[in-house]
Image (tube, rainbow, N blue to C red; front, side, top):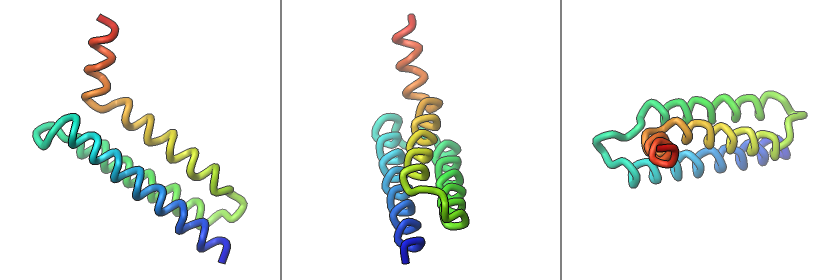
Length: 91
């Protein structure tokens, strides 16, 4: 039961984080330049972390959540709005 509950919790976190990423990118860029590749990478990464959490019982829930949160930040750093903001900040 504990294994199923922790898998459900990490799945909910991945879905909510991915949905938040998609909404924020849609608001920031619009339909014309939506980063579908980044969203796909985020979905695949979430599926991999969920499967690793399900397979290895010694992996803590906080480790899985933390690793996906850091992965989401890494993916968000390489989207067009963030790159444009950094370019404006530097110049």
